Image (cartoon, rainbow over all chains, first blue to last red; front, side, top):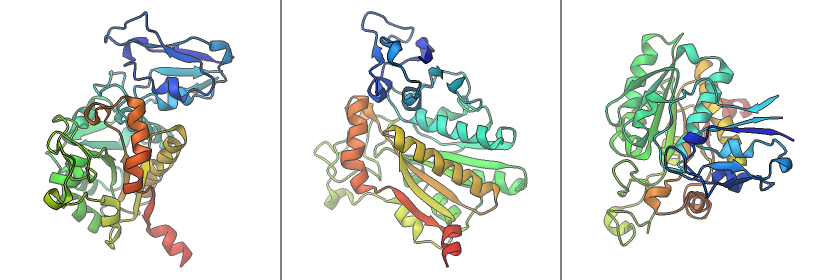
Amino acid sequence: MAKLTFKTDNCKGCGLCVDACPKQVLALAQDKINKKGHHPVEAVNIEACIGCAFCATMCPDCIIKVER
Amino acid sequence: MVVFDKPHALTDAPMHYCPGCTHGIVHRLVAEVIDELGIEGRTIGVAPVGCSVMAYNYFNCDMIEAAHGRAPAVATGVKRADPENHVVFTYQGDGDLASIGMAETVHSAARNENITVIFINNAIYGMTGGQMAPTSLPGQVTQTSPYGRDVNHCGYPVKVCEMLSKLDGPEYLERVTVNNVKNIKNAKKAIKKAFQNQLDGKGFSLVEVVSSCPTNWGMTPKQALEWIDEKMIPYYPLGVYKDRSAEKEEA
């Protein structure tokens, strides 16, 4: 299982990482709002993460750190 | 083991771009290339006017802000001041490079100036609120073409790579996009080659990145990336338009 770290307050909730993930690990947190006023991304299914870093590659704001 | 982290050449400043704007991806690719080539200390970037006007906040290398469209002229001066040590790149949008700065672009290419140009083509004027750009597609709806771009009235879009490839000057011209992971990897290769060409003293390298503008196209970020595939790429085909060194090797 890989480890994902998010700079949640820099997330703009664009959802590009959610679409890029081949394992449906990510989702936008509809019940949370960050400092910028967006629904930030969160890992809802981290057990499925394979650490491919597709999410981080698509993220325009460089908020995702991937470790495995 | 860290698989992916923010490159050192990007600062920690949160980017001001709209959600889903691909400027952030291209900034990161440039920063990754600067890191990989180990040239952060001697790189000087030239920021344009447009959405990326504040690019100087996001790169850790030295940056200069040029007058609108004049980034290649400024880069020429910086490069010629110390050609051995300076690594100079410009980062320009379509309003900057293909509209007001067309003369500087064409002439720096014709002179084969040893600089790297990153050209973001999103087919619209983003910063000013979505007016028609020289690169807007025929029929594209913008603030100033509410019925779609009428080519009889407004003319045809400028294809920068095709146009410059007819010149004898430029060393390397490639068009890439960043709408999915595979294309992002290819875009990074092209940007790295554009910087490597400069380090090898080969000359003018331009990478055109077909980008999205979800806000002014009136789409979600995901729809905008799909629109690149559906509309932008058929009009602006990806590929290498000129690579003089490769041509020489073949000959």
